[in-house]
Length: 429
Image 1 (tube, helix red, strand yellow):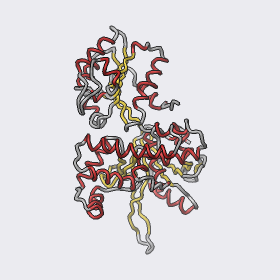
Image 2 (image 1 turned 120 degrees about the vertical axis):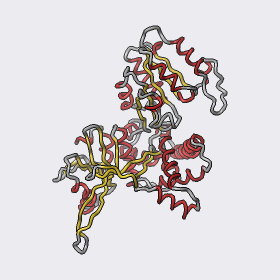
Image 3 (image 1 turned 180 degrees about the vertical axis):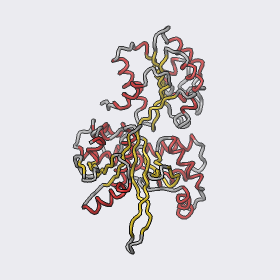
Image 4 (image 1 turned 135 degrees about the vertical axis):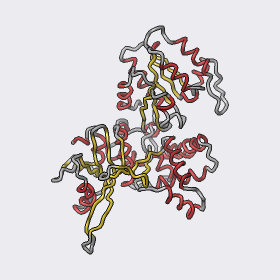
């Protein structure tokens, strides 16, 4: 069963022949290779591109390596010979005709930066690559390709993509998604035992081991414990200094704040987590700490904690964060100063939190996540921060119950989580 990834296919279509190297990034197992080699390949064919004008090569494929006389039995760290690969590609490129080059796991090619930059000088080549090396897939992409790298970041399945292949109701689907996440392989599994076993194996034996090996970390226990602490604290503000103190008092470990920050960057580079910085709405500036950390896949987060902490409100907030990024928004955590009266009628200054500020070009949305709104007092509490934001951008409350979009007398929009996730235009209601 094929899961459509139309939003990424559109982004690839929009970048065709733009003179840049299209780099598909994302966490392991999120579907990068399938997007490039199957979905995009078939789309090119459907537009009339001849198959012999599309060259696909996977550097982790034994069959492809044999085509260039490279042994599949490679030693750890051994790269594919660049000369052999280039000779093979040159033999396939038709003279003068446009040709598409689709390269999978390109970090396994020696001197891949020089090879790809060289191909950029050929006007008839349009280049698309995926890879799994943290440096290659981080913010260094633009530097590596001399300002000619164009990144398409891919997330695990959004809820709408997940629901498109789910056989149950929207409510059942969201419950499953909240526990097991959106890795494509998991979405196609039927048994809960199979899903949980797969996620446990992946997070502990693949993803974290990858981070440890890639960054040559000597004390693997610390980063594993830090990742579990981050998993417990999604939707809460974190501070490296406080996390360091937690290690010192609870874990009896002397991990420093700078090491905490470095470990979080390592997890970001591997796309296991993503950080959301705080933004002072009135001061129009970023606040360096504290900040929030969310997981790229909620199923991996839950597996880290052995599926013990399934808090609906925190998980819903993480899902909203990922959905906004899936739709192409830059997402911050908002902070707005307010002056209120205390019980003694004295004016006090408070910092109120806005869960998310989503920006895309000239568009901006403020969003609050509230799993349950039992009464009007809770509603006022959740929207209080909005009354202190004096601009005209849309202010939205997303709740855990099913609810069609509705505006109140202040113009604030309230809608249910499933309605938000399944309607790509829900923010425009």
